[in-house]
Amino acid sequence: MTDLDALRRMYETLADRYAERGELPLRDAFLVLAADIAVASDKGDEAERLRQRLLQQNPKHLVSRYPTFAAAAQAMDVRDYLADLRNQFPPERAEQLLQLPRETPTVRGTTDTLRLKLMAAAESDAPTLVEPTHLVAPAADASHAAEAIPYRWIATTLLFAFALGGLGLAYVSLLRPLLRG
Image 1: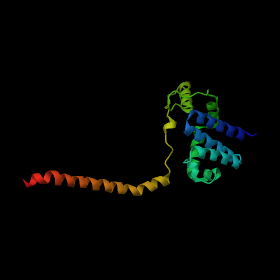
Image 2: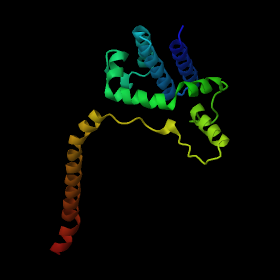
Image 3: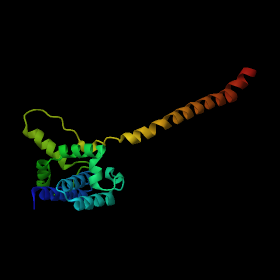
Image 4: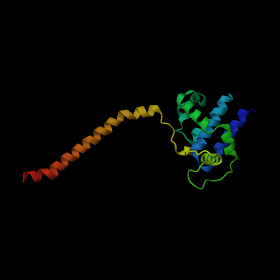
């Protein structure tokens, strides 16, 4: 067993833990990291097993658009996502998260990641800003944004058409009888 195997198992264990707690975005993140480690250790079948597990639980995940995890890892949007996950959860942080006691959060949205940031802020003398990373939505895919733009003019046109229709109806029903008399 190599260090990569141990790291993959650690990420998968964290995915299991967060699945039990109902923190699904973190479960997905750790499954993706485990699959990434499997690809890096040349275990494509293991990466595909993790991808299928992820897609079983979250069929609309970013990696669902690709036939395999290895193919997904080559795409620019997935590479950016993986780089962000690697920065958020390096092996040292994953080990810290694994050592935290297994408990159900009492406050909705309280995560171990946020708890770790608070602990790190308390230990350092410098003031730090703690950002709730679990509230940050993943970056929108540029292809979806490009698809939404052409329909914006239709909504604007309909808005103006209804506004003009409402003004015309108000004129006919309210002002016209007053102006005749």
